[in-house]
Image 1: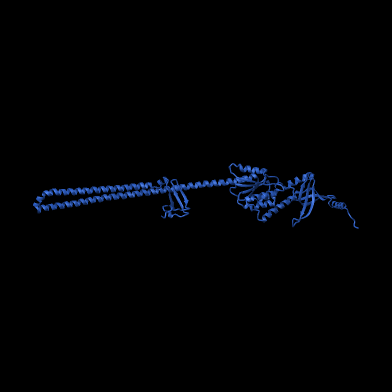
Image 2 (image 1 turned 135 degrees about the horizontal axis):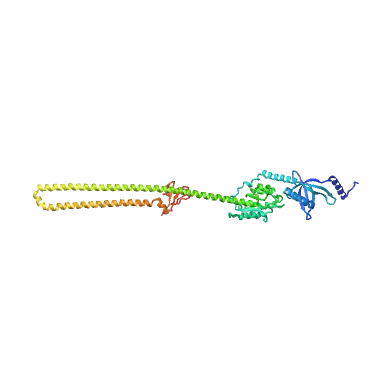
Length: 486
């Protein structure tokens, strides 16, 4: 019958073999899958090893860091690496192999090499950046347009963080008096729960992407250990996919985190984020003011040009009116002189015809006396009375004609003079400068005065002249007056 061993004997034999094989501490590489710190200060670890092709666990062991050792190793590791001694990281441990008949196999941790973990962290960081690059998302958030005037800001931070208070103080009490709408989406900003908390905050903001202008991720600084969650692939990926620009003010004193790398804009502190937003708004306001001043300058220059043009048109119009009045006055004077000449000629012709008739009458009288002396003698008394009366009557009639002719001439001259005076008054009244002074306007298109509505077309430019200047407008609609068919 084969020799039988009790369990204690077997475990004792195993202990002897392990003690003989591992009579001195050895360096072991493993990943911390679970870490618990007991109230007595001892730290209990579960170490694992995963396969190279998959994440399947191929080895596992318990390890212990006694309290007096843990008090030294933990700050040494975290200060050197800038990484918390926590689950999910690879470590190089200096351990002694122990086996207890009652409690079984375990490793007693005596020392830890932070340099190995730093190399592993750097490798993971490079792998995460390369993965984001291969997926084509590394610069997606940077490609978003930053609003010129961001006014509605979603904030991811711890409500009690000093950085959050600094950000709000800087943003709300700006000297320019700019107003912003802000809403805090609380999140845990360090520790094992920080990753999921930040992702949850981003997902809460997502339904309001059309409302907010940008997202700010801030915290009040801290050690590299406290900020390790920002070197996480899951958090970084969510930032790259977010539809709003993400600004970070995490408080790193040295290198950027991966979240800083993929964010739209990385700033050093929460206060710097607030100053960046305020500077953008201030720059936009300054640009608007410059455009306003330039617009005023252009308007003033245009008004001066139009005023000069109006003055030139007024001078030209005045010259035209004066020339027209002079020409009309000359025409009237010519007509008046011609009319007087015609009157004189008419009077001369009338006197000439009257003289001929008188000569003919004298001849007839003489002939009558010679041929009929006796009849003449008898009719002498009648002729002495009748002929002078006829001459007087004809002379009075001629004088009447002359008086009427002079009266008609003077009336015609008065009418022509009155017409000239009216034309002068009308020229003064219709002077564009006087019309514009009274509040009237002159509308032109292509330099011509608009008189007919039917000649206008949509989209044409109209220039309206005022006394102080002019206005350029575009025709958008033409309305004609309604006509009653009845």
